[in-house]
Amino acid sequence: MAAAVAGATIAVAGLPLGVYPKLACAVLDAGCPTAGEPSGRLPRPVRLTPVQVAQSGRYVALGDSYSSGEGVYEQDTAPVNDGADRCHRSTGSYVPLVARAYRFGGGTAFYACSGATTRELLSGQHGQPPQVTRVDSAASLVTLSIGGNDAGFTKVLTGCIVKIPWSSACVDQDAAVGRRIEELSTSMRKVLRELRVRAPGARVIVLGYPRPFPENPVESVDNLTVEDQRWLNGVTRRLNDTVGSVAAEFDRGLAAFGAPGSVEYVDAYEAFAGHEVGRPQPFLNGLAMDMEELTVNARSYHPTGDGYRRFAELITKQIAAGPGRPMNNFRLPDDRPPAAGP
Image (tube, one colour):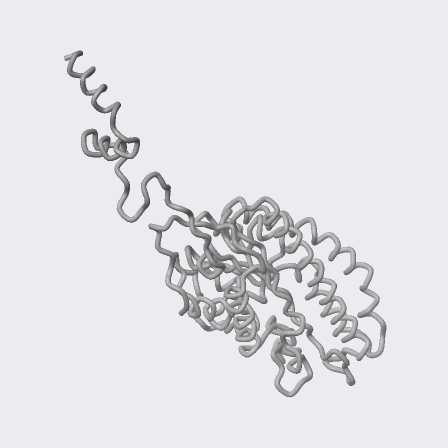
């Protein structure tokens, strides 16, 4: 036996180098090239496009009333899902429109809740689980609007409307509002970090708020003077700038480390230009009163159906455009990316 092995070794030793791999494949069934791949070359990962990343898993919609659909919510309609009757989730929100615009491999989960703050995204609301817990590794796209309730915008607006005409009670809130907006940066980072831990490869799209009044108001609206309207526009601008700055900073960190996923900010400040409160065809509800109970309807100063359709346009455009940099999400050639488009 030893002589046979020695003889084979001597015989093989005289063969050209290129023959060895073929001989090993034929005799030992080792080192054989894979069909379609050159010998000795591993499959190369393919970088996914922004749309492919977004569609690869589940779309999860989180956030506050500007995402839940408060402005078009009807009390007598069937709840969208568990807890929707308290969160005022509506089929008229931008979320169902985005879900119809793209085919998401893992479907859509809609859990935005009216009145939500950054803290409640993390801790829960109305006895429901925290919104962030609806996100896991299967999520490929997360959208949310958040920050307005942290700034106390509803209370601020009420203070502006329910005041003695021509008083300065509205703008007198500036210092307190400014402090709350500054504090938002820290809690916003906590939300983004938590989403990152739960869905490290997902695209997170943060939607800003629209300017509520014309850029240059010329008359009073809902007991709001021209000065009041300009101040409220400015508060919205400051709020958007803060949220947008945190989102951009977070995404720069992801890009610097070559990490998958993204955090993208959509500035909606000018989105309703020409359709603000007081215009002939507003995309925001003005002050809505329940005359029987003498209460302010929650849909006041929330988007109309046209407003939510405009939001859907902004989100679908952002899905297509991506973060403005290459995505660091990859797949192997054998993996099939989800089909693009509706």
